[in-house]
Image (cartoon, rainbow, N blue to C red; front, side):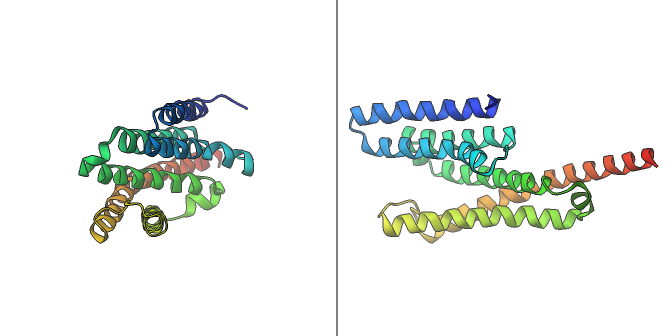
Length: 198
């Protein structure tokens, strides 16, 4: 098992949350303990995906994922930054950007010939829709949690849901412009390479 920067940060976060879990149990802070427990499980997801599917996730994606967990679970829930209304919206914007690059990571695993032939308009739409789908799935999770577990994740109901989906979608749109630029550069490089080879 290679100790990449992403893997070190991943296990560092899990260890940090484990310490938070023990501390919270000792102090009988059960909400913090539940968040820390969820943080441990969430932090290990990339590791289990790599082991299960025998693949290696992009290191930058893992770093972004762990930083997002830290911002949402520790800073947002345990420290209490969710008390500021803008923090939740800001994180949904970031999640849209993160999902866009996750979608691009999946796209980059296609064969070179197939990938470079795909038009930039299709890639743009794919990235935006991928982010929108992720935002919608998260709101389904929040709704289900509120109904089944009696939580209050959807705070202001429909208003909260729509603002979160719009923020996530906006993040996807912003990232899509950057992703399309990367795709165009890759196509240009391949064309230059083909000219040199011929």
